[in-house]
Amino acid sequence: MLSLATVLHWLKSRQVILLLLLILAVGIFLRVYDLGVESIWLDEASGIRLSTQGVASIMERVGPTQNHPPLYFLILHFWMGLFGTSEVATRSLSAVAGIISILLIYQVGTVLFNRKVGLISGFLSAISSYHIYYSQEARSYSLLLLLSLLSYLLFIAILKWDKKWYYPCYFLTNLALGYTHFYGLFIIASQIIYFLLFWDKYRLQRVKFFSTVAVTILAFLPLMSLLVGRGASLAQHGFWIPKPRLVAIFNTFDTFAGSAGAKEFILLAFLLLAIIGLFSIKIVARKWSWKKPLESLKGLSWSIRLDSIGQELLLIIWLFTSIIVPFIESKFMTPIYLTRYMTGASPAFYLLVARGMGNLNRKWVFYPVLIFIILLSSFGLQLYYKNYTKAQWREAANFVELNSRVDSDVIVFCASFCRTPFNYYYKGSLPQFRIGTNVGKTKALDTFVDDAVDGKDRLWLVLGHGGQMAPIRTYLRDRYGSRSIIVREEFFGVSVLLFDLSPP
Image (cartoon, rainbow, N blue to C red; front, side, top):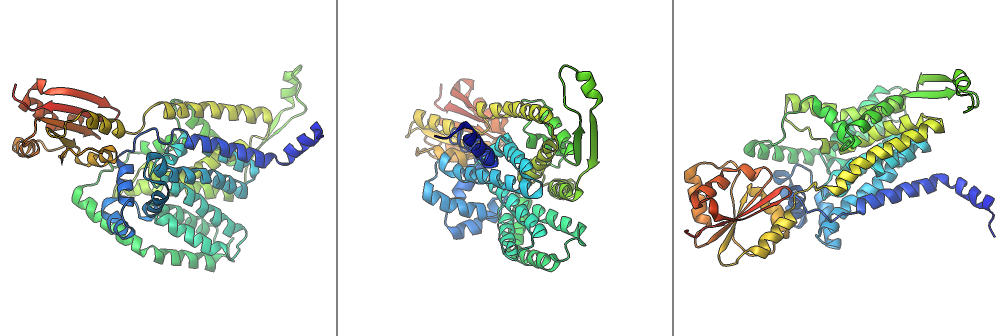
């Protein structure tokens, strides 16, 4: 029979692996929980529709129709071939990538600093509402996160140990990173900047490292043609990303921290911990006595010094190259600044925060801070799981399908691209027409509506993504009378109206 001492010794000897498994279990649960509850929204539906096509068609269409390179859509194509096209099936690819990312950020923190920082950063990632959101969305951002972490893990390994097999792995990872998202190029750029800053320190790696970078750049030449094709499409149809203001940088860090519901308290805590992460802080004191707290305080002293700046500087360059450079380009050239595009930079922020927490070397300081972070993070998690974050296209499509008449109804979409997520769910056969949200000329509306309602008695108007105030809504009400609206149903992000076109 095992003694208590034996069991305790066994647990202590495996403390790190047990804590990592616990963190991983929490991360898996939070990423799988309610995975298919919310509807597929516009961007997800667009990517899923593209990924259902053949490989050649994906490669041909990805430039003109998507803001991202083709790799994620190709992987999703084969993933759906195995698991289907349901919400859970399509989003599970991102969930798996998010789960693996927890292990990778732990490994990066361990290799860069120590196991304590690795465990804390893994835990911060596991409970991050920001990471969870993109682990539950059928888009490329979770894969971008995974590849950014793997790229940096290999980059750090090259700097530390310089083994030959690291370089081909580094090349393949960066190749996948660039072909997953254009912002992957900023991740690679940050590594080159860091290497150049410490040029003298890494003499042995110079030729191999920059040879690998050169081959990677050559492999990215087809990616440039995709960028040109997408740029031409945007020039023709207009660019939808606005020029950012300076507050956008603050909002990015706020989103990384998951401040929703916590009134920025968690962001302030994260920023303070990140600053602490730049220093080594030691508390020197005699044995604490609760009976004589004042005397104990007298013997308390602090030792604060700048820590090994090379490791922290790597995280700072990783973080700010992926944020400041896109901000400058968006401010003075083409707007490309979106926080979700910077998912690959978020681990650097968590690692700095974890480093700060790791520097709290007294349990009576560390554990209250940890509990404080957990409580603040729980606000964001509660809001995420409690409230809708994606438009309810499933509910809207099912409502129209259940209440429509095959012979007498027609569907009009405004904005026109809302047809994509609607038809992911809609299985009916009503004729469908699309109109832009800005079409306001009476003559154009007359022609459009006459063509749409020819031979029909009722018109379903589906409004979403800013189309609630579109001219078509007012036009139909004025043309057929306010009493012609016989059904008005509001869903999150979607409005559905049924107009009776019969003469009164």
